[in-house]
Image (tube, helix red, strand yellow):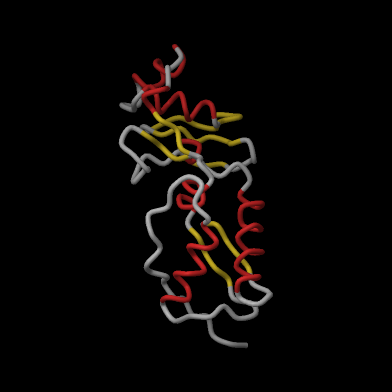
Length: 158
């Protein structure tokens, strides 16, 4: 059994909606001097997947409901963000300490339904979780494998 080795991949440009994320990753992998080999696993952060897939919400276009406004008053959060959290939530598991622990459509249990307010594409925007992270990972896996010469690899969205 070979030892586990992790390599950071630098040089991935700012990812925007519609970008070919697999092509950007493949180029960055080559540019750092690596070659994908059988049984390698590429870990990709959820945010870049979400950005490439256009899972971005412009907060200036969000009108919070009365329910979202009531929750926001008790959390010190922007009511528009609470509205987006509620839209991505199938069930609120718990509320407390300024967070909502939510179950999302795919069944993920996470804080604030996985809504990410940091480093969005533009100010006044947030990123959402991918609609189908398994399908996103499979698409990246297939494209990266093909680019590497049909090498059997894995992809994990973190």
